[in-house]
Length: 456
Image (cartoon, rainbow, N blue to C red; front, side, top):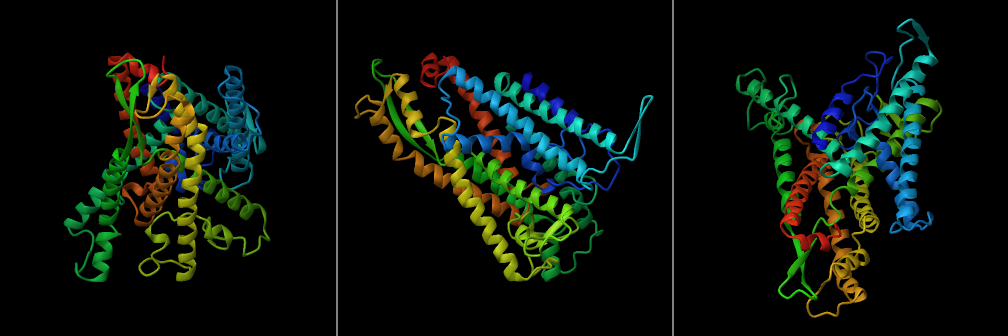
């Protein structure tokens, strides 16, 4: 009930337009990242989960460098850590919302606004819009906390699933140009001139044009690959030290760190592009090597090369109207693939270490539950060494694989123009929710499992 209630509130808030926003002309800074940053352009949830993700990156970096000086096993330090996280999220909402409202062009405000008997003008209207964005950012923070405490899974995962599912359904049945089913209806009824099916133009129309066959195939393959990869695992046998016959297995999955670290990787890219947009708007003499822009998107310089591949039209210079040379497109593809593969592996390691999924934390959990690995002494150090044979290697391989899948899905396109990362996240998070519900049922049937997972 908590999960369903928060989900309804999320959809409601994404449809509440910012009071004072000028109709039309708004430029969505995070348009290509909406599937993973949630939120909605021009709504109260303008910033989405971006500030939460950015704050998590900062805390992970500070924690990894041991600069916080907090022991997350200490209840007092846990409270301090959570308070610091909330403070950072509010700061990130402010730092993200201010340029959107006051930089000009991103969220154009009305010149005058009648609010009851009060007349607001210019900067006053902008301050009102910023206040709404700030409230929306704080609301989504506490909505995430409510789901994490009393709901199923996490709020961030729930919002990503909601956004991606909405775009998938819209892309499938949208009764206007762009909907897969209606586009095929127009093709079959002759409203779209496909021409000869064996010609280059005919194949292009069916595969990457109105037919979207490659996008459909990519979407289905991503679903199948992620579900299959979630089932690939190395199972380490366990037995209870004092209860004879009590046995179990500790699964080390191929995607051990899950797909969630991809949010962190894409958030870094989104923030880099955000900085580029701000510089382009505010720095009239920005050097060409740093970035040139056309229709709000980078088409040259540093910010072009580090921008992610969003769709087939971004790199298919031999079929699409790409203004860049082929070697420029190849450099952009190479940087995107390298960033996603290396970044996926690095952030997967960060994720495992900061969420108590590393060898040391896992060994302590197994030891505290009274379980041991058959054939080895019941010692934390011994269990940790066994875990070190599997967890670090699987974490790196899984993170790199997920990054490669995300780039591949983006390059070939998906139904509803959902980003590859967003689709991966939606499928993986949905599968995790299923596993969490099954685990809860298992713990109810077998109280011993509660002790093993530390849920007493």
